[in-house]
Image (cartoon, rainbow, N blue to C red; front, side):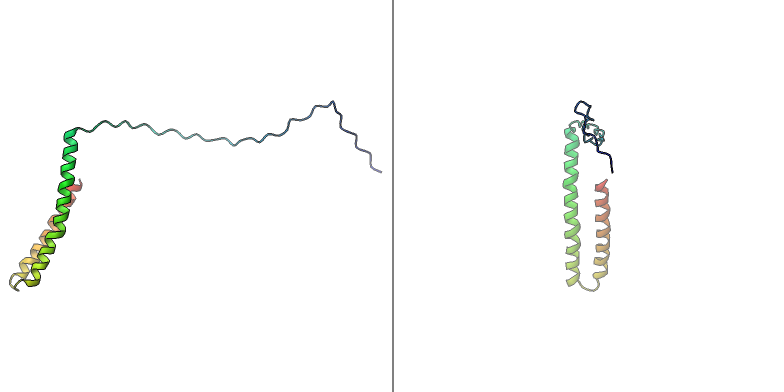
Length: 103
């Protein structure tokens, strides 16, 4: 026959209740603060002029070759080689101009 289990002693110290430990939290470094200085008005004006010029060149890069293509439709055969050459030169020139404005 098994031995009886003694009753718990009321005066005995109880173990502390287990606490839920939180996982350690990684703290990310704060990014450096960027202090921007106001731009010089002449620099802003130059940037605005450049943007305006780029817009104009882009519009002309689309419109002018289209005008040459339209002229090709009604041009005499003797003029068509020159118009094809003009179209090639215009496309190349506009691309170079736009690339230069990107810098």
